[in-house]
Structure formats: structure tokens, C-alpha cells
Length: 173
Image 1: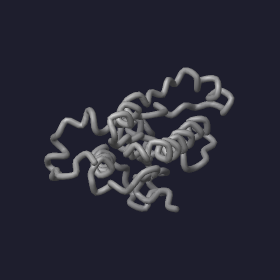
Image 2: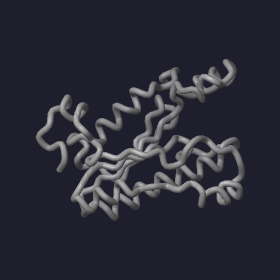
Image 3: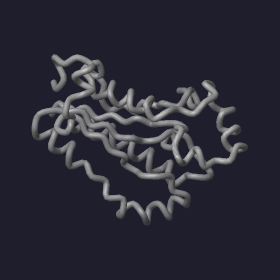
């Protein structure tokens, strides 16, 4: 398997272009009904060609970026949540199909992360969300990146078809 004899430093500094692929399968939160989302799906253009190349070469790690919106229902961004739940199921199906070709397929489902999107929230909205997070803070991009590094590493060599939630404990179970 790729990275078999490499140190953590070598893994972090190597050229991952042929061994690891990451993608954001669904884009930004989409407000609208499931019918609106269904109309948009043909335009999403999900590209898994790099993962297909990995399968043909004999292995690799495909890491999709999902969302906690795909794990829990929402009355505000329901259509986005449906798209992310579909992404999470795509990961499971690709893992089943590509496992025999030594391609591990996993997803990361971030919770609320300090980004332009969360910085645009009102203070009232931020406080309401923070009350739902046991760690009482938003995550940082580096915390998501660390999970990606783990999933790409030999330490995760027996993990495939999983969606790892990184949400400060907001959703457990």
C-alpha cells in the first residue's frame, strides 16, 4: 500500500497527487426544497476520475469532504443536507466497489468550522450554535486537515467506507 514505509514527515511533505485524492462533492450550503435540489443535481458534475485512476493503478486513498448536514435533518438547508447524505452513501458504495482494487474511500463531515461562512453569522447566531457544541467553539481548518492526513496515512490502512464527523461533539452517535 502507498506510504507503507514512510514517516509522518515524509507523508506530509510528499507529492500526494497520485496516491491521495480529496474532493468536496457537494459545494456550499444550498437553501431550497428537495425538488429545487433535484433540478440542480445534473449540474453538480461530481468528478471521481482521479479515484478511478487510482483503482487502475492499484491503490490509493480517496477522501471526500461531506458535512454534518448530511447526518442531521434541517428545516433551513434541507436540500443541502440531502446532497451531503448522498455523498456519504456514495463513499460507502465506492469503498465497496473499489476496496478489492486497494482504493480506500472515506469522507470527513465537518461541523461548524471558522470560515468566511461562520464569520458572517450574527453574534446571536454564533452563540446559539456554540450552545449546541460541547467543546463550545467552532473548529479550525487545520483540524479537518489533520483528519485527512490520518485517513491518507498507513495508520488508517484498514479504514474504508467511513464518514468521520469532526464537530466538537455537536452530533454524537
